[in-house]
Length: 151
Image 1 (cartoon, one colour):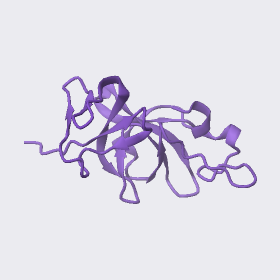
Image 2 (tube, helix red, strand yellow; image 1 turned 90 degrees about the horizontal axis):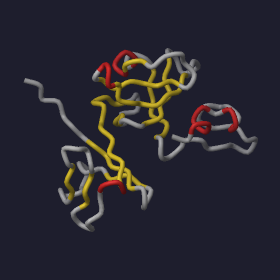
Image 3 (tube, helix red, strand yellow; image 1 turned 135 degrees about the vertical axis):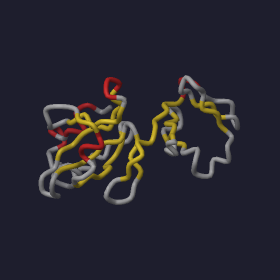
């Protein structure tokens, strides 16, 4: 029997923040079988939230990796690839859709390499320094793989 832990987070489109129901939310929510989040405290829900599932993996810093996370990965810290964690229907698995790699890969295939969550599709990690370079990927902001598609 598989005792896999299921965790979800919900992005509140109006408040522009995540709810992590497993972290002190005291069970005042419902996640419907169709994947919609309903907040029982204030009656909000449905299309006001985007639900994302935990992949079951953590990054090199101990951070949970969720669907929709923007990640940096590679063989070493000097060889970076960037991508977005997505659900692969055809493989029934989470994968990484790369911004600077040629194909989408199953997430588990990458976990043996350097792997770090640097943001998510709602909160871009791009943070320019004084010269205009992204502090995450070291590219100019107009060439930053995270800034281009803005999720």
